[in-house]
Image 1 (cartoon, rainbow, N blue to C red):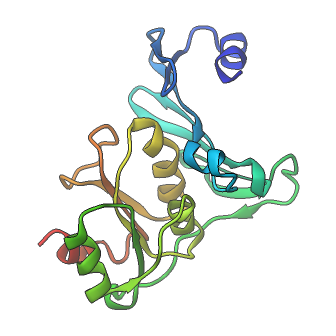
Image 2: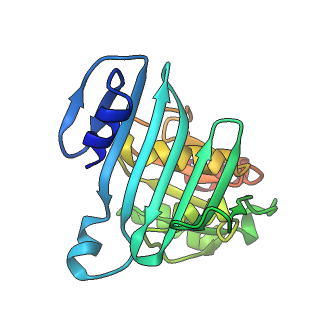
Length: 202
């Protein structure tokens, strides 16, 4: 359905989808994860949704994440801010802002990783928060201060990186750069980034 809609509205754009690979070549590319959290769909849990992002000249400029069972949608545009609203009701919109926490030792931090050394480091030096499929959205909303060692492919990171950055936060890959196509990355409110790096990247 997403591919059909984009093909009709933007026939010259390229598409990269987790389910069907890449098609078309263009300076504009849509990056799709039709259902992020398939295991939650199978189990009947509400924490799953669509990931949609638009990349122009190699830069993510639009990001959208939905949670249909929760009736919510999050979206951001490059330079235009990040927002959340009920699905189908754009009149009731909240602008997103990351937390103001500056001390990593009292920061609320989560992780999605099997690296127990990273988990132990977070539990020792910060305030551990159990993870769920909405944890990165929690950083953009200011409920969490950081999420570390987040795995994922480009379609997992593409919309959430923009949401967090437009809410005032920061993303960095596990090598210290800003690539979304090389696996794990860290999301923070930007203010605790240095302390967090010392914590999980000794």
